[in-house]
Amino acid sequence: MRKPALYYLTSTFFLILFLSLSSESVNASKAFANSTEQDTVDIHALLNGRIWLNHFSKVTGDQFFLTDKYITGSVTFNGRRFDNLNLKYDIYSDELLLSIESHPVILLNKEMTDSFSLGFGNRSYHIINAGTDTMSALKGYVNLLYKGPSALYVKYKKIIQPQADEGKYDLFYQEHVVFLRKGSGIVPVNGKRKLFKLLGDKKKEIRDYLKKAGIKVSQKDPFTYIPVLQFYDDILKQ
Image (cartoon, rainbow, N blue to C red):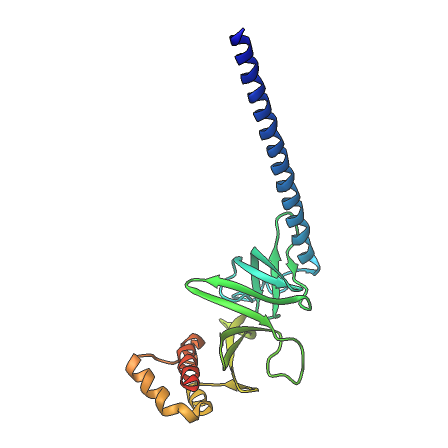
């Protein structure tokens, strides 16, 4: 009689275990499905924009920042952050493009786009939406390059030079403007002389530091301004 009883107990144990695992599997599947469905709904919230059309296919070069390929980045949209998106930043029109599978390319609604971040090479770019205030020095999408007691911004843009390519074709040309926030004021910086002038109260200390550290500052590469501002802010904290 012991064998049938043992068999019964063993069978009952495995049946309970199977039902328990099946229930967990079903719950996990439902959770995954709900999560996937929610993610899809969330992503579709980004599609509140216009369909992008390329009006510059006959212009030599392209209108995009960094590359004409899509870059994986993140967007803070209406207060919510979305990661792992395929993005292009059109710096001629100052618009952000989003590519989602099975959908046309969308121009993200600028009024709802708070900021976005792109990684390219070994550098990161955090682009904020500075708004449309005509009285403000900063407008539209601006790269927040450094933020401390002072701050550094870069506005990238492309312009079209008529017939600049072999005298026949229009050509995209990129340029940028650097802005410094010191205190409550924001002013353009057109070179390192202007930068040192704006930081004139600590100009000697800054020059000595850059010389000792072997740091070269160039308007062509605004990233080289970062150690200048970091050092300046550190002095002020002392």
